[in-house]
Each structure stands twice: as C-alpha cells, then as structure tokens.
Image 1 (cartoon, one colour):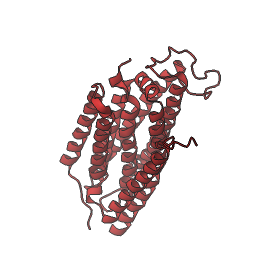
Image 2 (cartoon, rainbow over the protein chains, first blue to last red; image 1 turned 60 degrees about the horizontal axis):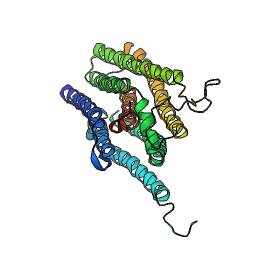
Image 3 (cartoon, chains in turn cyan, red; image 1 turned 60 degrees about the vertical axis):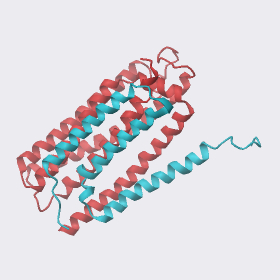
Image 4 (cartoon, chains in turn brown, red; image 1 turned 45 degrees about the horizontal axis):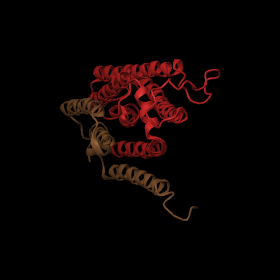
Amino acid sequence: MSEHIVSVRVYITIFLVLLVGTALTVGAAFVDFPYGLNTIIAMTIAVTKATFVVLYFMHVRYSARLVWVIVGSALFWMAIMFAFTFADYFTRGNLSTGI
Amino acid sequence: MEQQREAGTLGMWIFLVTEIMFFGGMFLAYTLYRTFFPAAFASASNHLDITLGAVNTGVLILSSFTMAMAVYFTQVGKQRPQVLCLVLTLVLGLTFLGIKAVEYHEKYTDRLIPGNLIPGASFTTDPHAVHLLPGATLKQVEMFYWIYFAMTGMHALHMIIGAGLLTYLIIFSLRGRFDPEYHSPVEVIGLYWHFVDIVWIFLFPLLYLLGRHLGGH
C-alpha cells in the first residue's frame, strides 16, 4: 500500500469544520437545554471534532488495517475503564443492608 | 522503505494508545468528581476565562492545520513551505503556552492555586473569591482546581515537549533531511501534535463550558 497524500483542499475543509465546531460548542454552552443535554451536546461536538482530526489530520482513514485495530483497542480499553469504575461508584448505597 | 514507514507509524500509534490511557485516567477522575460536586464544578468552571480558552482552542486547531500542511509539503518535496509550516506550528504552540501562562497567573492572583502548591499563597478562604452556585462549597471548588491544574498542566507539558520536537524538526528540515522518500519523523511528530490537540478539544468544553448555562459570571 503506497503512501496516500491527503489533498490541501481536504486539510482546509477539516480545519474549517473544526473552527465551526468550536464556535458551535461555545454557543451551545450558553443555552440551557433540558434533561442535562448540555454535556451530551458538548461531548458529541468534541467527539466529532476528534474523529475528523484522527481520520484526516492523522491519516487513519488512509492507514493500514493494523492502525485501525490499534486505535480501536484504545477506545475499547477506555470504555472498560470508565464502565467498570462507574459500575462501582454509581451503584454504591444501592444495597439496603447499610454496608 | 515503505514497510519501515508503516512500522514507524504503527509504533507511534501504540505509544499514543498509552497516552490515551494516561489522559483517560484523569478524564475518569474528572467525571467522577463532577458527578459528586456538580454545583461546585459549574461555579469554578464559570470563573475560568472563556475568551482565552476559546482563543487557545482556535490557536491549537490552526497549529494542527499547519502541522498537517508541513507533512503535506514534505510528501510532495517542497522544502521552503515545509520549513515555514513547521515554524508556524512552533510559533502557534508557543502562543498557546503564553496564553495558558496568562490564565495561570490570573489563578495565582485570585489565590485559586489549590492546596499549598505555592508556598505563602495557599488556596483562598474568601467565600466570594468564586461566585458559588447553590450547593457548592469552597472545598469542592478547590477539588475542581486540582483537576484543572493536573489536566491542563499535563497538557501544557505535552505542548512543551512538542515544541522541543518541532525545534528538532525545523533544524533538520533546514538541512534538507526530509524528502518524499524519507520523512517519518515529520509524520510521527505530526501524529503526536494532533493527539495533543485532541486532548485539548475535550478539555476545553469540559473545563470551560460545563456550567455556563447555569448562569453566574
């Protein structure tokens, strides 16, 4: 697989998308959304921005399958770390035995 | 040569995975404490300078763009623009650190450096130092600042290391060491620089924006 050269046009597009994302997240922060949606909206924008950086600036979209596996493994282990810790902290006091 | 390049990229990604786990631990701590003390985290967050934070986000995104362009110009074998883009990236990185230093100094003058990190300027005991939302205490606000300084401090350290790596790249690119055939250092340090940018993409909303909709100043 020969090296893929990402075009300047793509880089500029991603740069503009990232700037728009930043403006959106600042704007959305001052709106009081119901049901605690503020955090979800902010994180959705952040994950979207990060995905664009990883896929295009970091060339993962054009990289070998093995790179995809490595990146995926990072997300997988992160998910385990968060899920298992939350499973502990957020269920404390749920037992009625008073332990 | 092709195989060497791919092996280098892969190795950098494995290092970045360890970095993701490292920062992940701090993001986990942040999430837990924010769940414990939502009002205090919103109060402390509102006290941060949103303008400086947003400008710094823009500066860092622009620096990621110039870094990506540096890789591009190396791949197509244009040395002058390549050096220029690397210098721009370094300047933008240092700009980010400068703005961060201004923010840290504001925290210092407001006595918001947690614990007793600065001898003789321990964390404030003035209940009006930060506009406290209902249910927030100063001790909990201090917890936010521990996490704030740990996360932004580690991020800034990564930026400083990145600035050092860029200096190395600039010196070697001035000597014409990178060309379309061999440029793994540019590519790999680029990956590192973008990773540091991504960390900030998450830090900015989590630290600066999370309590804005709850009012305060």
